[in-house]
Structure formats: C-alpha cells, structure tokens
Image 1 (cartoon, rainbow, N blue to C red):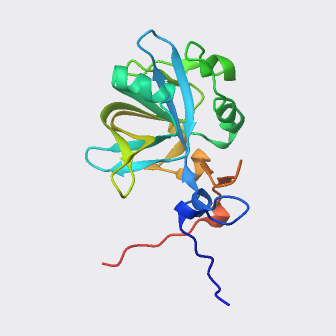
Image 2 (image 1 turned 90 degrees about the vertical axis):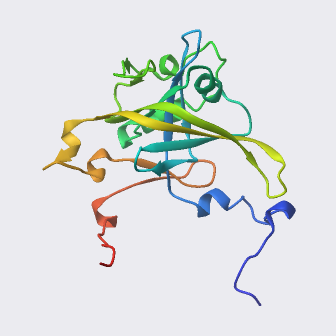
Length: 206
C-alpha cells in the first residue's frame, strides 16, 4: 500500500479538510490598512501574504474569493499599510476579520487607535510595533493553468516607509523574536507563534 496520499485538486482532496493552506504554513499575516476615496478606514488580515523583493522592497497579499474593501480601496487610492500582528494583538486582528459594510471601519469595531503615516495618506495601527507604508505597484487577477481568470487578486506594493518600535532593535539589528509575530496555519483557526526554543541559525555556504 502506498505511503503517500495523492490527489488532484480539481477532483477533491478526499480528506476531512483541505490540506493546502496547512501545508504552506505557517505564513506571515498581512494586516492591511486602507482608506476609501470617501475617507472610510478599513483594516483586514490576509493569510496569503509575503515579502517579494529587496530593492526596491515590495510586499504583496492575495485577496481571495471576491473584491473585498481592501482591494477596492487600494485600486482607488494606490496606497496601503502593512501592520505587524504580534501576540498581544491577536484578538484585535481576529476581530477585524469580521465582514462589515463598506461604510463601517474595522478600526472602530476592534477598538483600535490609528496613527498617521509619514508618506501615504493611509493611517497605521497605533499599537502595532512595526508598520510599512506602501504605494501600489500592481494588481494581478490570478489565472488557472488553462488561462481562465479566477476570483482572486494579487496586490503588490512598494514599501516607501518603515516604522519600527526601537525596543525591537539591538545593536542596530532588528530582532524578530522581540516582535512576537503570529503566523497563520491551516484549518479554521490554526496560528503559530515564534519562540527562542524554535530558533536556529543556518548560514549559506561560501
């Protein structure tokens, strides 16, 4: 008997829960703040998020399933901010995942204070220890292998400003562990936190 569970996604996975996002895990959380043309603030977490380029620094997040407020706002204004989800902000982050009407703000719903950015007009999460101000570089609607468009969009932005709480910097080095970042796993609500016990260093070969 084979020791491998094989499936073709188009035919179903045959398991109790789709394993895809549990396999590609843990993933950093894209806690994205945006502002509509009308001035309404939006804040939402995206689990398909990552860094994409060094110079210039570019980050991106995927809006899956439908054109959510974050995507509409970014397309209208060309700006967004990423905010670090540390362990102390997990409950607030989860609160901002609740679907609200476009005229309602997740900042208010979660009881979060804002703080003005330096370059973009989108505010940041005041309690977040790291934030990145971004200007839109591209929005790509995803396609299948056959070329058919799917109802998901990949949003990319150049980082034009970075805010770091000085408590996270030691001898000029940003300490990831001090930021206590939370990452997304699979399932309905699986999350991971980093710890010193799980840290190791591995340098590239010369």
